[in-house]
Image (cartoon, rainbow, N blue to C red; front, top):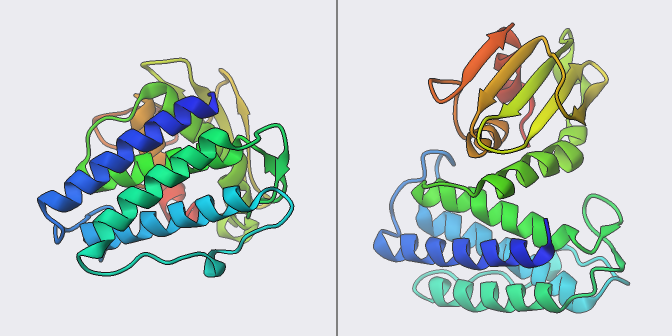
Length: 237
């Protein structure tokens, strides 16, 4: 997915977050226990600020979260978020994506930041107000989670677990074979038979991988469903 498309999603979902906060800043966010929309907006604002600082600093230096401006509290937060989100989107549009950039995941291509921020904002927009997630963006999000996050899960969380999960998007082109074992998580893209298959819309697969939705009637399951129960208790970030 091109960075420009990620940035377009970032702008749209940022606006939806602001609107949700304006509608009811104290509304609870069930998918983020203990949070309301104000806490959620502050969290996303902090991530935007961090990315903006990194992109504006350039690829020669890694900027740490603690060194970036933190969101204000109270009535100043929504306006600060809007200004920061707009400036971040502009910075991502102007950045040199041909360079290798420092990130928490090690050196990455310049497309990393637009993708990461679009995915972060899309899932948290869903946390705030629900609604659909664009299918190609959702496939890209499952790719990102498996490429960057799944490998961070320590193998001891999967002690005694060995098996494969076939994830299959039913509304667009997206299939993955995910291997779980005590050495960790690996995956391949494409069609392959797993010990269990989880079939559903791309957005639902993305939300399941991020532990936002359970395996329910939005999915079809074929095979050893016990493997799916491992995910929400072990693949936690």
